[in-house]
Length: 379
Image 1 (cartoon, rainbow, N blue to C red):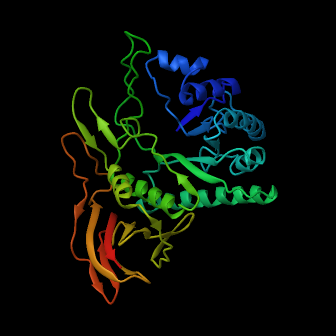
Image 2 (image 1 turned 90 degrees about the vertical axis):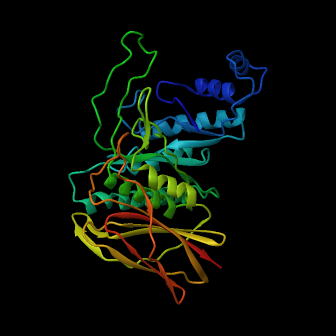
Image 3 (image 1 turned 135 degrees about the vertical axis):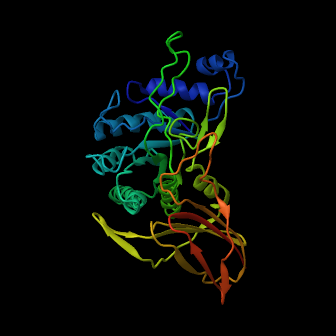
């Protein structure tokens, strides 16, 4: 997935970029790529049409209808050049943007028949909140997806269209405190080496919120078809490195790794009854969960959001014969602000016993403030 520049860029520049990446040879930009050392084309299938163009911080920021018209004409041209590409129109940069969701409605009114996805971005912070309120922000992400889906379907109805537009949640995560001041290392050779920036240290409670955001994406897998982590290493990342030294894993790595490993197959329709806490925006369900069936295995992802109480959960797998519990993986900590470092990594998953099968139901106890993956073999 690459992005063309629709801020200071143009339709012609987007076409040149596409030609450079996807044409084999015999054109100005494909031959330029070959001279640069890449004989075969990159064959990039998915292209974002600008980035966060609703944001006034962007050079070339546009109003929604203005952006929509530019996207429509760029999309028409790109699909003539390479009919196999998928195109992503910019949605809102955050669910708190003053233009949300009007931005989606106005821009899609121009672009709906020409693009394949609309993008969403979201970052959450808020360590000053009570931990349950901090974790409940994942529910806001779920509401965000529902709202944008509704806008897409409204425009579909308005245009009497047969096309369904899906969502690309191509930038998301937790925005927490930085580990150190930004260091400039490029003074001697300006622009030759990027400086460290936004190298954040993530805590255990950040990992639980990150996991909740993953579950929000899973629960809307019918419409969220792309959900990238654009920041993998060092910059706001789950994998950290030291110059000439160690590599280590931040707490947010583990929910991502578990979901990547076991979140394959069919997302189940889960009906959950759970205790809740009241806060300023309503009630906070203390159990957050999603389940995925993959052949003879069901993976149930669960977060106990309670900061004080463990939780007994009973799973009724209707229509399945439960054979055995394969694994119960748990990420927990007594300290919500616990962090990992090169020399000390206290926040790591462990395996637990104790899940019980009785009469087709599976009962398991979740630690307070914990991320859990329960893998169950079924018929």
